[in-house]
Picture 1 (cartoon, rainbow, N blue to C red):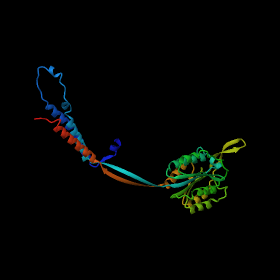
Picture 2: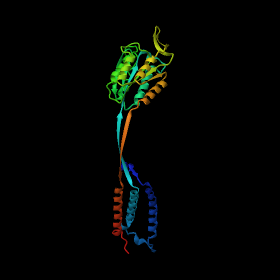
Picture 3: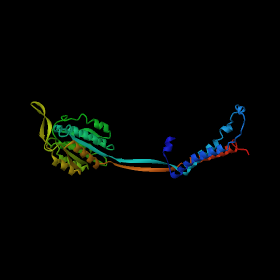
Length: 334
């Protein structure tokens, strides 16, 4: 019942101002009823103690109460209560995205906090949280490449697979071409309206069997757009290095093959970004998020139904009952 009334809207809401008159009608009835009471002076009221009020006298106000209820219902009828029912049909044309993440030893550099790899993982997870309609997969690479997670809509599983990722988990090196080729292989057969690879690396191709530009041309043939990200500050960066005295943090030269990354992006109609800090990396993913939006078509079908009839019938029944009671039980005899 509460849910029913919460759905009602009124086509003529000004009629609801008529409820203001209800208290005035009640007050007028009370004053009029009081003034009509007969009075009789008696010397002693002892004889009235045994008298009981009959039902007719006790319920004499029922006809008036029925009339007020009927008037209230008629006000609602005049305000034209209506219920709008809506049906929503949503068409989602999701985007398939493969994240290709460099996990080579240089990703331990600490110019991003706490290091490049952990910063990249954290921002990637934030990016995934904002892509609820998309299938997303994960490829990792260093000296070789493999699929950490195929395309999936189960983002919780995908995010959990970021946890065990660390530098050194696979053969060291930087095989950008192999990483891109593995990502292409995972997304090339997708039927999504848009297919995207986001490739993040901090180095130069120094291993692997596939040339990065050749891989980019393959991506172009399949209509796959590649966004490339060069992660790392310019100049030098602090990085843990194994020495004769154990692991020590030393400044090492930052060497990112930006030319190759730019060519990969331009070949596939993508875009190249440079991220030199956590904040700039977040901005990079935010920009990619804006560039690649899922298409959502929402069709709303609206139906309007008039609901005054039930109130009108109830008002008619109450008025009829009030008239019947006045002419019978509560009839005033001359």
